[in-house]
Image (cartoon, rainbow, N blue to C red; front, top):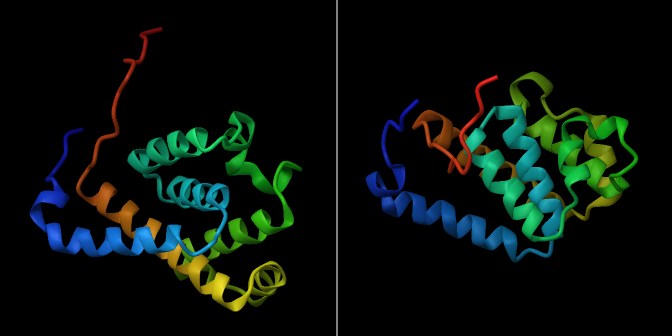
Length: 153
């Protein structure tokens, strides 16, 4: 696989606008660990290797445990996530898969039990933003850094 284009170079002002939204979301008061879990989970759903690689590295740098990263795809079956994280992850899945889920009322109620109105909007914008990044990276075939080549068995 090879990249189709460098979208940063092709439309720098557009990417600058998306980066500004990203920067703003980081300053909203949402927990940094929660932000990374949401980014990883949406990227898993979308199958964005570039973003999964980036955000698992970012999560580790911020002190996230390997176990919580590894189990994120099965968060419902693990006791490692808080009620607030569970609400955010359920909302992440619902919003990422919006055409299928239509953001159901029970997931929204679970979310609102843990998040204020402002936090709900900020979290939803976080989810929308990572979905935008995923769509850019996947569409234009962004390649994550490769540190070690796969071994041949």
